[in-house]
Length: 440
Image 1 (cartoon, one colour):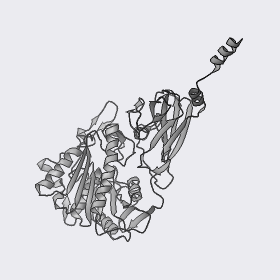
Image 2 (tube, helix red, strand yellow; image 1 turned 60 degrees about the vertical axis):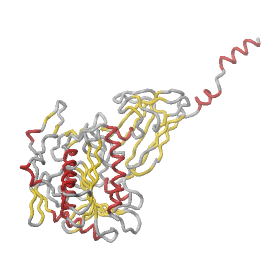
Image 3 (tube, helix red, strand yellow; image 1 turned 180 degrees about the vertical axis):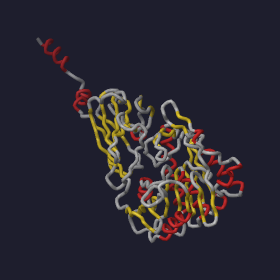
Image 4 (tube, one colour; image 1 turned 90 degrees about the vertical axis):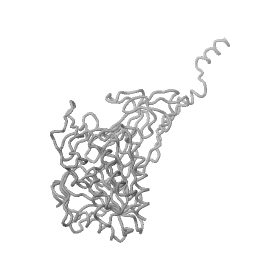
């Protein structure tokens, strides 16, 4: 009788650690749960069974109600813990130890536009809400999600508390001025993008959150500005630089300019011709004036043109425009080159060596060569292997292909997920260091 009782007790008995573990709920912790959109996240999953396999999904709905998602496969350690700082993804949308992989790999869901870029269009509307979920088992990215064992929402802010947003109509200048909290004065930065040259605010709002008075400056396709790039007048950019340099909360006398794509060659022209501009950050820019002629007083710089006959349409119906721009280094195009050697300020050139939008790495080397030939050492070149065209603030998702706002078709931007996103992290810190150094 005693043997039967003992035998039955043994069958029902569980080791205390396993029994206690089974009762412990799965938890998903993210730090910070509310913070600026350029901040890294610390993500951990606890309370799993030893070596349990799970899928970590991330979901974001943008301002146009487009759903973006990502998923990755993880396996808990012997204590039931997953820590993205040390544990690799074994598949899904990315592999390896990528602590920010859930954000880096966000892309439009299957039912949405396949080449849409995740951008915050209204930086003050509401935070971007990132939802993270833990599902049992390893799920295919396109499969119907399984049981959810834990979830958490994270708020990603593009304006720090106290940042002021001022819509600008000053003379002919249009845009948005972002001011950090406090009395100032603050270093002043003009911020421009490429694509259609319209108003893009998310980088400016983040710069203001980091202590800069940042002017998001459109140059076409906004309010009463020209609808397309036909001809540029430096007077517009001069007025913008003068306004920012004189603004009471801006620490003058000089200001900086940061530009991406077409915005980058405009930034180079501004520092070349405008004494108010003492520092320029060129991201994926060209060494020549592109798209439309640029007039400044009695001087006109012609535009380097695109030849659409050199565009390739890939089997996926994506456009490859890598060879479309005329060669700026051809002697016949010398009048289009920006005479950067005339600038008295400092340059920061940022390029991805796998930029497939155009040959920004070649153009940056040409700019460096031109400066050195003229005895100048007022530059820094950051050249990132594996990075593509659009090098944004950190935590921005990687987009190999995106819709061109002018052509309205998908364009290859190039790059590799991990290399590109690490370039975004590294360059963002160095941009701020550069601006603080030269805007004392």
